[in-house]
Image (cartoon, rainbow, N blue to C red; front, side, top):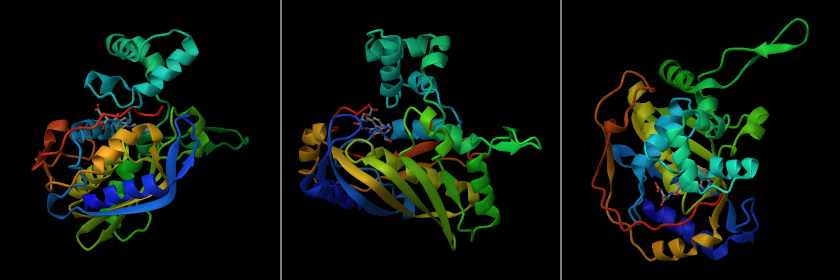
Length: 303
Ligand code: THF
């Protein structure tokens, strides 16, 4: 299964079209790609051709499920993957030439500073568990309604109406995109019940294949497994679909090294207990077996 990922990487590197992108770094990019993973028997799309920090990705997923959009809880757990965006924003707005390390330290030490500067806007967590609603009044104006918890509704619809074709979790709130540090990349999840199997399709509009995709695949499979456990189904297939699927030009060393490697082993995920609800999982609940990855390959994230 991992070979699909390597083949996609090679295809983009060898035949993608070179384009300028928002970050100024430049990419090679293709339009549209699909990967399929069978999650039977605890299998996970966890790459072995480089070390993937699955606990970091898991902490991020648990953070999404809390509805939190401030990076501080991640920072306090040593998760660094969202730090670059608030840092760039701070430097831009304050004009202060503070390093990323110093900025992150302040986020950790100073709660008020964190609430002012650590928020990413209404990104995934907010849209997933508290999608804003509006109620129209008789006078034609409108007021805020109660937020929609899409995740709770999803558990409910999978339980009570498994045959539905509307099991969707959506991050792309058009009206709020301009307030997000970054519009959602993994924007639409759709679930599909077939017998006792729970399948998941993910549409990702923009995909950083070298750095982001290993995290995104793990996270999607993790969410699928947690939901399957909650609704009493077996995890089936994960179908990943990408829109703008690209490699950053400054990831060349990672790509050429990783493409020399061969997949080694088949890691599995065990969830050691069944929490009360989808919102009650803890990092300790996840154990990965048979993961002996090849060396990590460092590369900078494009901001
Ligand atoms: N923007 C870009 N350009 N790429 C992305 O992958 C990406 N994301 C999220 C939002 N914007 C993005 C952020 N997710 C790493 C991993 C995931 C990220 C951001 C950064 C990263 O640096 N990974 C390193 C180190 C991990 C660590 O130190 O813990 C790695 O080697 O995997 C994708 O959704």
